[in-house]
Length: 525
Image 1 (cartoon, rainbow, N blue to C red):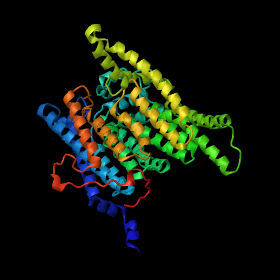
Image 2: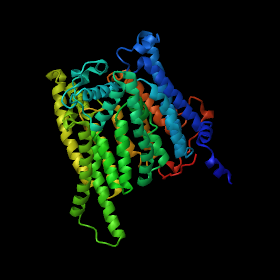
Image 3: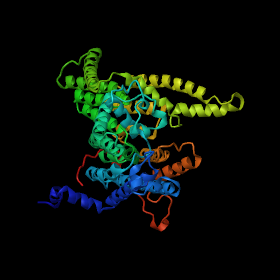
């Protein structure tokens, strides 16, 4: 037996232990330390309950106020920076080809586990999810009324802006939330933890789907997993923040991967389930029709047959896909006992105002440019800019869908472009929305420069919100520090110690290999 064969047959925990002893393993431990810091600091600085008898019984309520709150916030930010530093170091090693796909998969649970015990971080959405589940449990229609009609402990922790808002999510989301509140009752801690656990299948699907997308699209499997799954923007926000995007993105990515593997109906079924959580995933479905039609033509050519006419092929594939979509959405709505009212509630996101979305940026600039002679007309300008952006978005979706139909790669690239357009042009955007296109885009081959830009963007997006869910985008020092950190992170991906803090004589140039673009399917540690 060769040494490599013996290494492969060793138990997984021994292989994992050996990995943790390597420099890349040290990065994994640094990220674990950061996740632990985020969890502990979150008890004082996170999106905590408005009344927390658990902290009070442990005599730790001081963490939420005064110097305790400052200390807690410092601990959280140290943890976030540690995770970002660990992620960048791991990315640098991955670019050199020093870390395998299997090694990176070991890191995912190491970084995720501490976050399972954190309070909701950087968002209060988890409390809204529980309140929405309580509405369904208590006989209300979540698509007709907001949580405010159902007073109780679960309502007490919902952000004020969302108490009167109807549920903008699909029936699968409601079924999960309803099941959780039936199990946990008014126990907010248990409900939050169960919500987070229900998101883990989405993480597992991403761990499977993203490398598969890279294999099909010519990317690097290890880099894809590093960029789209281990990204702190994804783990801290989607797991730590308890967002249903974790399930939605996982199902959508898996559905696209299955469609590329010619399992079209299964792929459409998974994407339909993703839509039944959050409607955004639906933009992938029209492009899946193109992928299916491409496969039909290839199969006909391989069999030496004349391919069906484009119209006939479109009717066949789109019709079958639509039938699966309706079956999934209809059955889940029937089980939940709700209709399609959630499609009209999507406009509720318009309550979010920050300049991550282009319409809001335009409204801010327009207000500043005209306020000296026209007064403050921000809301009026915002309404106009959002209307124009909606028209432009519809046009982009139509044009991209038609133009990106020639090959599989074209179709998947079309999904990425449309999702980026949705994030940028929608009435509102939040940092974790960028996880939607990132999960799909990671499958493509990227230059080191592109990866550095995405590293900087991910870092900046991770830092522009406060741990308690409040927006830091309107505080200049906060934004400036986030920009500095983003630039350093981007530079550090390609250059070890870009600020030369160790001095010239200790500089170690990073040799960039073709790992950024060459496909890699190796699974050995």
